Amino acid sequence: MEKKKLTEIIEIFKESGLGKLELTETSAEKSFSLKLEKPAEYVAAMPAMPAAKPAAAPAPQEGAPAPAPQDIKDYNKYRDIRSPMVGIFYASPSPEAEPFVKVGKKVKKGDTLCIIEAMKLMNDVVAEEDGEIVEICAENGSLVEFGQVLFKIF
Image (cartoon, rainbow, N blue to C red; front, side):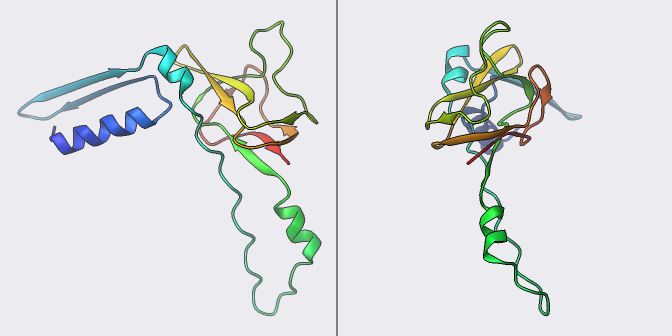
């Protein structure tokens, strides 16, 4: 494997929320295997990936009536908090504990919203900004995908 390609892979791994990476490359001449693992404390302390911002409203087509200002306001009203990784969604720190957040709860930047378990590592998903939880889109104990909407915040 080329040094440049290897360096890029390591940098991507460092910046990701992944705790472990195994890579094998085989060719007719040689075989290459790479195993990287971050300490659990490092993965848990990594900031969650920033939530995706909603796309701008599409421009009205020629001849179509322009949307009313109220429609535009409602379009940008809520923001999505998306899953930074694939894993199991947990709404509380333990099965008998209260959930981190409920609909209507005001959160501050840095507040824990949920935990996602990935490869036996628990990863906190934290609020990127102040706001109020208006919808919880994932079910406790369910598998979530990368980029899946977990919460809607106002």
